[in-house]
Amino acid sequence: MKENRITVVINKPLGEVFEFTTNPKNTHLWVPFISEEVSSEYPPKVGTIYKSCRENGIWSEMKVVEFKNNEEFVLSDLDEKLFVKYIYRNLDDNKTEMEYSDWMIDKNFKSPITKNVLDALKKVMEK
Image (cartoon, rainbow, N blue to C red; front, side):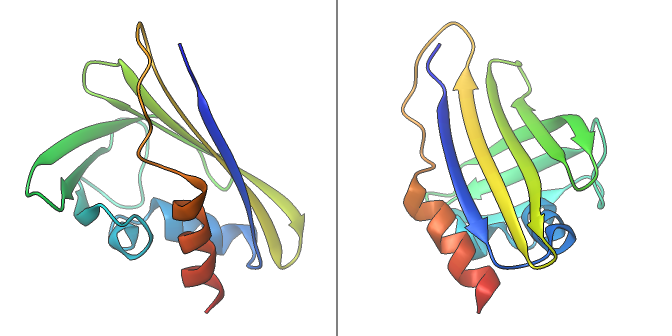
C-alpha cells in the first residue's frame, strides 16, 4: 500500500478551512479535474455520500467513514478500497495546517491530488 501525503498551511481560521473543504459546492474551485460535486446532506456526518463529476462527465461516489468537526474528515469509495483523509491543525487564530492523504487497500495507485492542488486551495481561500 502506497500512501500519498501532502500538507499545506492556509492563512485562514481552522473552522473556515474545514467548512470550505468539506462543502461540495467548493470542490470545483480548487480541484481542477472535478467539474461538480454534490452530497446527500450538508453538513456531512458519517454515512454522507459525496458524488463527484470529473471533467470527462464520469461520476464517482465516496462515503464519509470518519468525521470529527474541525479535526478530521475521511472518505472511502463504496467498496472501501480507496481512502481519502483530511486532518486539520490550528496553528494560530488565522493559520491552519491541512494534511491530505490518500491510499488504496491491496494495490498502489497514482493519486490525482498533488501539491499543486493544495496550492490552488490555498490561493482560492486566501484571496
